[in-house]
Length: 222
Length: 324
Image: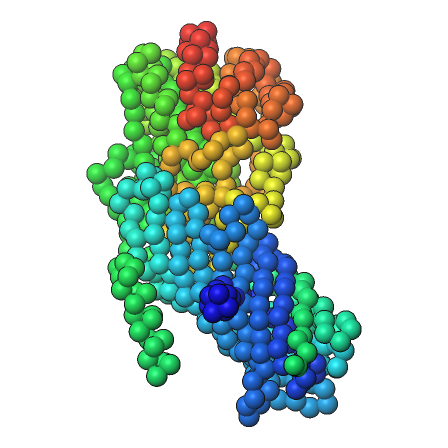
């Protein structure tokens, strides 16, 4: 059962709206985090995730998270993300870090089912203190390839519509701010907000913004 | 070893699903061909643009010109009107510029509301046999607004008007209605279906935007209707450009300035199930017409000509007997 739960967590965890990491509060005693976020990311979304610091030549945190938009069907639309955040450079409480993620998205409406593979890369520069941080971020969320499978209802309107893979299918730049505040020994309140901009002068999203309010729990070392 | 396993997983995913690739640039794969690409489709040339158009009935009978909604929709959801051909009416359908199966055009071709009015005038003149042939306009939603805009400019040329739920005859009325009917409910499945797709596919070309607009109907069903009415193609550029035009030029959206000179009775329909419209908005909007018969069409939402046709049709028949 534990194995199944682990697999499930790995499969469903992930979101293009990455978890904030306060590099000053990740330490040898608290290497594992879990988080719960709410916000707007191409829909009103809930995100759950899990992260673990790994030893390496630079501080690095692997995270896996899962997000889904609100609605009566909570499993037809979701986004899974698996990747890592790496601290690249630190000086006088300033840290430059980078994130790289692979993304799997699923979207089902009464007209189409979309299955998508994508990636996300971003850079974060900020001021990090042991109890809070404030940073700016700039990233790109690439929708690399999408499979379209149309429903009977769509076929009624357009009987010869094609199913198949669309390459490349799109992408959005995003930029904004993020911050966090430590609460007690194990919790952190985090906030992200910013704007999105579609690639190549493409039409922007209907609501070209993102916002995320979340709670991070840092597991004490056993 | 891990990389090899990952590669195998990706290959397996592609293998178990369809491997066919779709090019958005290739016509007819995700959105239907228009009259430009498929010359077998019935079309007319109006003011230099190729419009998808067809007619039913005897060309010398009184003409009913059917005007679809949107902007950017098409007349497929109004095809019930062809039943009027059996009542000795000559029924004319056309897809407006950049809409449905009509020719795609750039944003620059939506320079003023007047281009839609001139286009309607061109369609009427194209089919009208002589100046004695009576003309009735049958407009739905945006099409009812356009019909009213035409009557406002040429009140003496129109023998009757059947209007179903025009958003408004002024831009403020229209905005108020849009606000009530299209409010984003962030915790609703349909709203999230409407916005979630934006992260999968982006584009700026006609085909991509038309396809995305078609998909958005999954989350953009008119109030009171369970699904959208049938359509061929939503003209996204037409829709975007027209909304921008109206926002930038609200004065062009006032179709009431000369309506007092139109004494003919208008049949004005609103639906039972579209709670954003209702008697209140129907009275407000139709108040600019000097002679109007307000009717409530039962068992339908906004898409009255499609979902409410069985109740609407007898009222139209009675009305046409009265005005023709």
